[in-house]
Image (cartoon, rainbow, N blue to C red; front, side, top):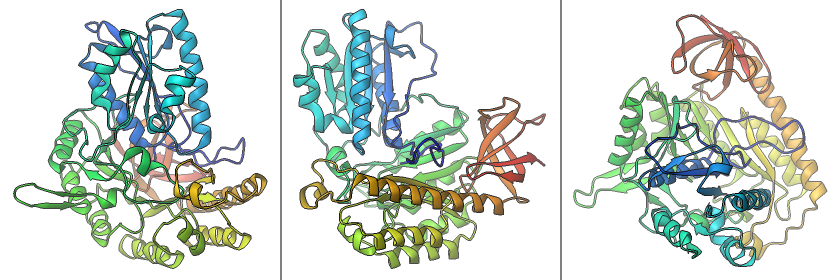
Length: 477
């Protein structure tokens, strides 16, 4: 799951993955005068977590809560957590200590932990360290009002039960921190792919697909609100599959993609994340045939070594993945691809590492989310394999991957000089408010001077004049 991204953190050897970086997620929604209580929320992790926070905000809205950006004035403080990497857990614990300091200055404030970390660390947070009043897993957000009521009476509460049915399809999310241009729609929850390194199946449960007609209704609502880009979210969107309980009508992901694209040809459609084993030619044909389905696919590979892929239980080989890249290039020649890479997985050799570097070259990714292996308790890898690669080796291999990806990104952007792209204007450039920023269909960030008659949410034809490894620069033509 991936959002607005920077390619590489130049301060160290880690890549910046918005799905992992632990960015504060407060809200820009103006507080309603009719609400008597206030909540503050931060989200860490994948785009699904950010989407879940919007569901939580909707639930709280019906409980007389309005959002605030100030911890000190909050009656309820929530943190939506991620368990993908150990660093995320360290960050969450530090934030909880800060919340408790604020609570001492405002007695009665309720502190809650939501999301993927809730299940694994519930007893530690509630009983050992007594850092929180509420612990809720990803399938239990409807119970939040009851747990808040109990916490107000001094009773700590927990619900981390996983569900086979919950999709929150009937809840209309409140768009937090939205630019009013781009937004998410969650189309499914959970994951059935038991990758040996991953905790998601244990923290989010089994796959279940949301009713497509509720997805369409949400897409239409977003279009009416002025959104110009919708990203369909799921741990593995390509495995989306829904069947009507009575008519037995079946909807696949490619069907859903086309249905959403037809809502408005002026609203772009993206999706994340794809699993290489499940993405079909029908999805590729949909991208090719509908102008507003963006020519960009995030297709995680994790390793370029077939031996390591087997240990990871990724269910494909290096050669099979390459054939999928070839098929993408054949059907959609102007499509860009990005990926996830884990280096330093159990037993990884230098030869395995070199295979990962070589597949970067072959696939010519525009960027990658790159990190070294971090063993997660409860996973198959933690139970079955020794985490036997020294940390210094992991860091060195990661730096080599980061450096190579940086070269590929730079070269890819240099090839775009002189070309013209349709860019959706997302807002002002961070460095200069006299410039706009936006993305091309291929998910490349473009910065260009403002021009009279153009505003945020408009499309602009931008001719590229220069480029760095992370950004294209140009002018509206």
